[in-house]
Length: 151
Image (tube, rainbow, N blue to C red; front, side, top):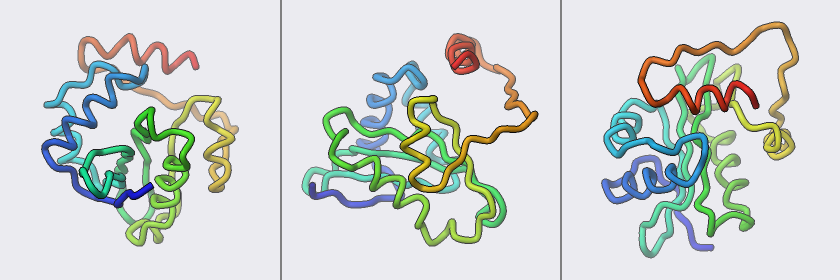
């Protein structure tokens, strides 16, 4: 498993990320333009690519102030690289990243079946009376929002 950690994506890797998104229920339908804008606006990217080919195999991004709060988004591993510890390497790289060590709270949202995976790094399910809220602002995203809200 000869992978290299990267924090910026080439144009080809952005296209590969867009393709990875098309195979997951939670991000299917994202356009290449959406992906490019998202990459530009993300605070930090933590990803892995094949050393020899540069092909993107794992990706995550964060929105953060690098001091108090950070939110992890889009943790994704190419299907052919799953069960090879790449997801573990990706989360390890996030939680140990030097730029994130001052953060007081690191957040993520995941499907219920992924909870045991993230608990290995000290993430806990928050049991309180607060509710995540969102407002759908773009046509076509409402279906994904409804599925996410019911899980």
